[in-house]
Image (cartoon, rainbow, N blue to C red; front, top):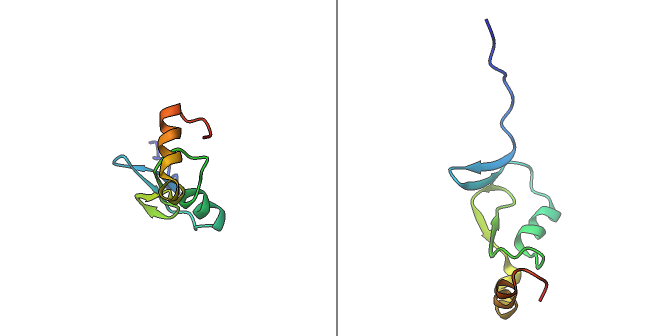
Length: 76
C-alpha cells in the first residue's frame, strides 16, 4: 500500500490563472511589485494575497510605458 505524499502547498503560484502569494509580505517585495521600472508589466502579481496590483511607476510615467512597450522592452 502506498501513501500519497503530504507535501505542503507552495506559498506562491497560480490558481485558475491568477497569481497568489501566501508568504509574509516584505518591504522589498512590496516595492518590487508596486513601483518597478524594470518590470514592463502594468499589472504585477500581488505581494500578498490573490490577484494583481498596478505597477505605479507606469501610471506616473505613461509616455515611458508606451515607448518601452513599442521598443520591445528595452529601457527607455
